[in-house]
Length: 76
Image (cartoon, rainbow, N blue to C red):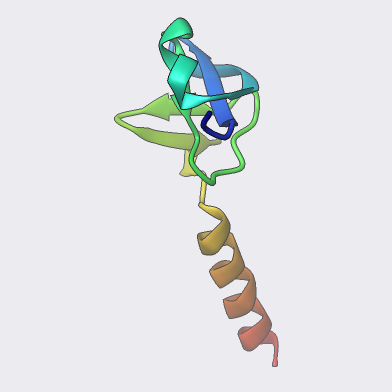
């Protein structure tokens, strides 16, 4: 059995819920999109394969870490 991951439930391109779901039964939820390693929240939008929060793409965890590390470097 595959491991569950986070999926966003979409209505008209807007995230209305985030659920744990195994890819093996993802077809049971046709409005669900795998969020990969993005911290997607209710109210975010999804357009052309990209999640957005307030018009800005939602970064992956690795991208968030890189941004934080860059901010720390600028502060030193």
